Image (cartoon, rainbow, N blue to C red):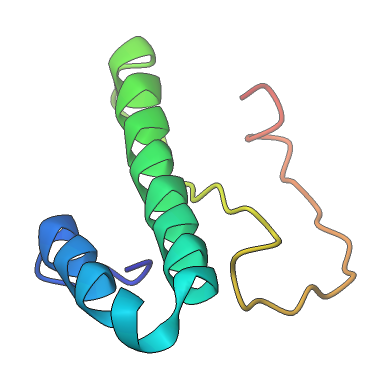
Length: 89
């Protein structure tokens, strides 16, 4: 989903519904929460782009907001240095 390799969110939802009887409620609840994160992220990105309509020279961005409890991601502690050009954003 995050890499946009899925054909559609509807097909993802259908697959989750098919797997629910086989894998149980815990799996389906986690997967449904992941789908909600994905949908919410897309909505936020669309709203942001509408409010801050891209002007010439601006950097295009896309951000994913993920609930830590539902995604199988290992967090690494690292410092992020934001360039001065981006700090007003």
